[in-house]
Length: 400
Image (cartoon, rainbow, N blue to C red):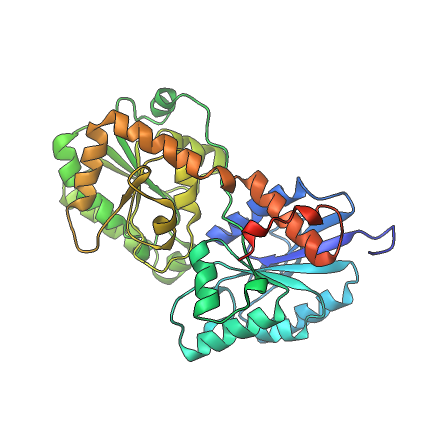
């Protein structure tokens, strides 16, 4: 333990607000949750991943900035961290695209210099890795004190495909927010959706989200439910915006107009704050998850929708297979063009089925509240640091 006048610092390395990306929002919410669980002797700081290498845009939580795409910045940051005696533990958010070099290998150079214990969370875990990916992930796994994943499937892949030790892996689910308690009909009036059947998708827009699938399905849904509205809530992903502007959003808008769906599809170009987002989910009758990547390990948008009690119609991907069944929603079969519309119509025609799916989706996410996720992280951090407080509460069921 540090001297009495020096607090123990846990440093997160991640993107962070005001940057608009899923991992930045995740880290912000997670730190807020952990801060509710740790003692006053422990403080959490952030090293923000940012090409600008300045803390000016950030709040006081961010004490360092590292450009993960510049090897020199990674090495310099490692030395600065080593020289800060108050930093006792590092928690790294990992996505291959967050770091420079082939498959983000600059992170390995950073880790090779770090003289502090660290845990790392893999947001993406791909099966059947090519040799280069296998080597990088195995090297990270050997260096880390613990590897955090958010699904059982990711844990299984790390053990079977990457041969990581079970002792290194811990499963902590993605956190979810409390759902809005405002009356659904009141919310529909508030957002100009009174007496509408509402289907929703939210998140940063990019072609891999497959929003066009939901838009096309609205042609069939509208034929049975003319008052149905599909809300697509979210700005274009900043990286995509930088590369090609609003090309994808314009394509979606053209698709809406070509099919005469102007009254049935709304593209809401907004990065909604949590309160507003949870209100949109609370008024949603069916949530559509049309992302095209079957190997996507986890989705905050998917879990937020479940925790808000939304019946879900989803393309098949890892988390859907773990969380969805006939009592909570529908997993679509590849290549069946009309299946989305058919299932949406079936659910909207059957209020009792919709209510049952809503209740079951909500109940299935009760172990993913940010409060519980914060507790699990606090327990893990105390355990790695060797601090006895809470250590005994690190339950074995989260270690696979």
